[in-house]
Image 1: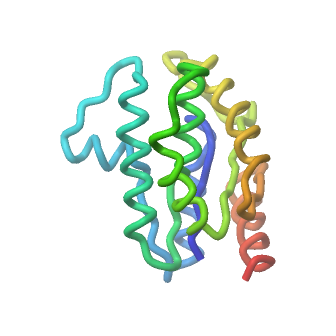
Image 2: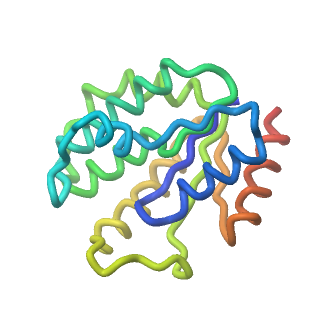
Amino acid sequence: MRVAIAGAHRTGKTTLVEALAARLPAYTAVEEPYHQLEDAGHEFADPPAAEDFEVQLRHALEAIAASGADTLFDRSPLDFVAYLRALDDDHDLEPWLDGLRDALDSLDLVVVVPIEDRIPVPAHEDRALRRRVDELLATLIDDLDVATVEVRGDVDARVQQVLTAMRQIA
C-alpha cells in the first residue's frame, strides 16, 4: 500500500511517518522532499517562494512514480499545491495536473494531519501561511478520489487511526 502523509508545516507528519515505519518494518519511508533536496545541495529562499514549492512538488511526483508498493511518503503532492495556492490564489497549476492525477491515482491512502493547538510552533514560523495551507488542504482533500483519513491526538492515537484505515482499505 502507498500512503502519503499530508499537512501544513509543524503538524507532526514526520513524527507520524517515523512511528508508522517502526510499526510497519516492511514499508519504505520516504523523507519529505524539502530535506532530500536540501541534503542534495538545493538552497531554498527564506521566506519560501513559489519556485521552492514547485521544485518540491516535482520531486514528490517523481518519488511517487519511482516508488514500489508498501511506501510511506512524508508529504503529499497536495501539500505543495496548497502552499502554491496559499502564496498565490491564481498560481497556474495546469502544467502539473497530469502528474498530480497520476500520483494521486497511485496512492492508496492520504493521511491528513491537521493543525492541532497542542503542538508548539516556534515564533519564527509563518503561522498565517500554516493556517492558510491547512484550510486549502482540507478543501483539496474533499475533492479527492482516493481514500483519506484525518488523524488527531497523540502519536499513538494517530498511528492507530492510520492502521485502522489501512486495514479497511486492504
